[in-house]
Amino acid sequence: QVQLVESGGGWVQPGGSLRLSCEVSGFTFDDYVIGWFRQAPGKKREGVSCIRNRDGAIYLRDFVKGRFTFSRDNSKKSVYLQMNNLKSEDTAVYYCAADAAHFVCADYVEGYNEMDYWGKGTQVTVSA
Image (cartoon, helix red, strand yellow):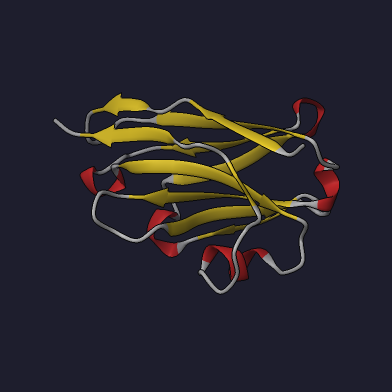
């Protein structure tokens, strides 16, 4: 049974930082791509970043480059999203998702294909 459990969300002031974690279970870590997505109130869900575990290739959307960093810990079967210099427009529910690497990360993050497995999400609120 595939499970993804996010943690690390919360409230932070603009310019602050948060680190989201996603612990996965139920599948072979190296065979999957794992991504972060977010959905702000009243908006469509959008992709943020993705890692292809087979080779560690990371895809990051332009609007978070220079601020967000995607990393992983294979021994803990976990991935992380370090978010720095947060802005009010980063406020959203952040979801961790996984798929059996049928497509490259860009296809998932840019919205051309859907991940099969999703966590329940963690709220990130950026406000003064």
